[in-house]
Length: 432
Image 1 (cartoon, one colour):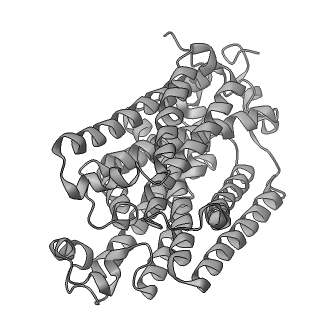
Image 2: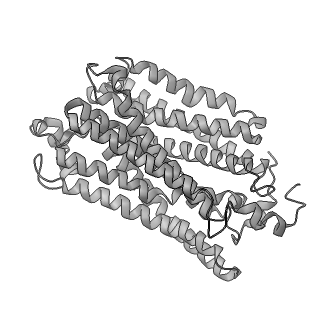
Image 3: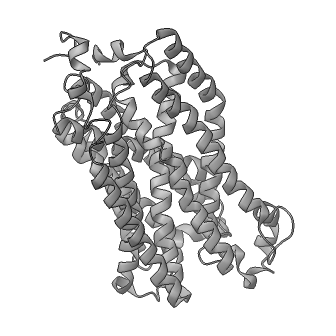
């Protein structure tokens, strides 16, 4: 039945927009189980690596970092779209916003992974973050960046500025999600249009100043925990590069969630092919945007030819990493670009779901390509013999994150039933 001809009260009936009752949320057991298994796997990976020390400990930390920065990117991407839609008064997305909210709400929990990395790195005096190592205390380039890393002091001292930045990321992300997502939850509990409008206005005001804060915290978190793995490397485009993969992965993840819910017979007439069409357009746009930013960063380094910059790419063009780089060029851009170029693909739930799953694969591969080559810079690593650390570290974090999403989705209405733009979204239709 077309949403434009269906009774809104029928479309928004409890049977259509909930997975379980308030007393027995659907997916709670499955979600909790996945979280427990994921945490155990990630802890096992870290435990195995740290117990052996050396490059094995670095390997385990790198895998955990890949997992943590991957899920943080997904959550940040969802938060970004929520704030942009609020500022633009975009009504078409009201029926799909709840799933963006569910994923964005997990950002403070994902941030706890950074706290784990922070504690281990400081306690070990630098596993992946080599600028913490005593042997680099006299390095010329590190001395030039000491103010950024430590604030005061230098190698051997407690990196207070680094700790403060990490705590600020958590505080900023908690507050933004508290308002943007929390107010949407409050709308579920009120039927007063004036109250709902007031809550929406608060989200809009917070988003206005929150987007610059979002941009700064995203960029500096990427500097600290991705670019900081090689303290000699620097890039003026690194923040926007991480933003590109955040927006890309957030869209792909939500596309999968929505497709699964529709497959379970929920949201019929509420989320239609028109919404998938627009979601597909955004997925297509950020496929191109990621490729544009990636190429521009590479091109700048190619023609400037500064050793501190080119070393990053030269290392990833050797020791087998060049094959992963080629995979990213094809799989992260060419394949999704050609696939979702078609209007038909954007409108078909199953095809867009497959695209979303592929987005997740290449997203994790992208973060992996950034971090993992630093573990064995001379190619003397264990090869496939150390793959279990990658499976445990990356897979454990992703599994725990998936469990949290499942539990969250099943515990709340699948849409914001009192969203001021719900009527507009139910009648949404594309004309291009």
